[in-house]
Amino acid sequence: MGKSIESIWKDGFLKDDQLVVPKLNDLYNQKSIHIIDKILRMGKYNLIYLVVLAAFFLVMGVLIGATYLGLFLCILIVAHIVLALKHVKQLREIDKFVNSYQYIKSFDNWLQNSISEFMLFSRFFYPLFFLSFVIQGRFTEDGDALINVLISKVPDTTLVFGIPLFLLVAVMLFAGLLAVFGGLLYKLDLNIVYGRVLRKLKEIITDMEELRR
Amino acid sequence: MSTDFYTSSILPYSGIIIKICRAYTDSQEDFEDYYQEVCLQIWRSRERFRGDSKWSTWIYRLSLNICLTLIKKKKKNKQHYSSNYERPLEATEDNHAFSDESLNLLYDAIKKLSDIDRAVILLYLEEKPNMEIAEIIGTSPNNIGVRINRIKERLKKILDGKIN
Image (cartoon, rainbow over all chains, first blue to last red; front, side, top):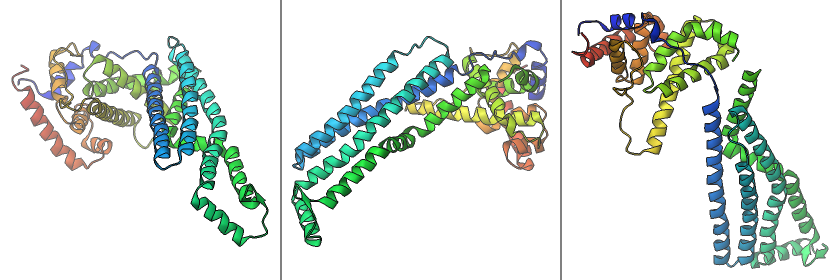
C-alpha cells in the first residue's frame, strides 16, 4: 500500500463533489408509515388473540358444565371483534395517496374515534362480563352454599329471588362502578398494550406540526 | 425543523454527518434515511445542548449514537425476519458512494470493522484528539491510543495491495 489511510482520507475529501448533502424532504414519510404499520400489526395480533379467547371461553364453558356462561362470554368477545372489524373497514377507507402528514392525521382521527367507541363499549362489556360470572355462580352448589351462609349470618335480611338484598345491592353497585369506570379500565388496558407506540405516534404528529409551521 | 436552524447549525457540519452516515450504511437509500434521522434528532435535541462541549463535538456524538442505534435496530430486524441471516453489514462492490476510488476502498475497509471501531477511526481521521475521541466514545484516552493502532493495522491489512 503506497498511501497511508490518513492521506487517502484527506486527499479523498479535498474534492468538492465528495460530500453531497442529501435533500431533506418529506422528512417523516418513512416514520409515519412505520408507526402506522406497527399499530396495525399489533391490532391484528390483538384480533387473533380475541378470536382464540372467544373459542377458549366457549370450549371451557362446555367442558366445565357452564355452557351458558361460556356461550355468553364468547358472544361478548365476538361483539368486541365485530366492533373492531367495523373500525378496520373504516380504516381501509382512509386515502393513502395524500401526503404523510394528512395520512397520519387521518389515521389518528380514526384511532381516536375507535378508542372513544371502545370506551363506550367497555362500559357495557366489563359489567356484563362480571355479571355473567355472578349469575353462573348463583346456579352452582357453591353459590347456594354461600347464600345459605349469608342468610344464616343475617337471618332478618330481605330476600329477592332467594338472594339477600344486601348481596344483590353489592353486586349491582360493583357492576355500576364497572359501568362508570369501564372506559377508564379500557384506557388502562390500551396503555399497557399500545402505550409506547401511541405516545410515539403523538410525538411524530407534534413534530410534523412544528415542522409545518 | 426551521430552515434557519438547518442552515446555521446543521449544514456547516453536514460533512461530519455525511462521513459518519456513509460509514454505517451500505446503500444510498439507507444513507439518506440515516442522514435525515440524524438531522431530525439534532433538531429535536437542540435544547439539551448545554455548551459543555463544542457544538461540533456534540454533533459528532449525536450522529454516532444515532447511527449506532439505527444499525442495531436494522440488525435486529434482519435477524427477526430472516433466521439464517449471518452476513455482517458491509459495502457491496457496486455501491460506491464517492468518485475517489481510494476513498471508496477505505470506506469498504472501515465498514468491515466493528461498530465502535468504525466510530473511533472516523474520529481519528477527522483529527480529533484522543481525549475528545475518548469523551465521545465513553472510554479512557489510553485505551483509544492502543485501539487506534490496532484498527490502523487491520485497515492496512485489508487494503494491502489494493491502493497504490
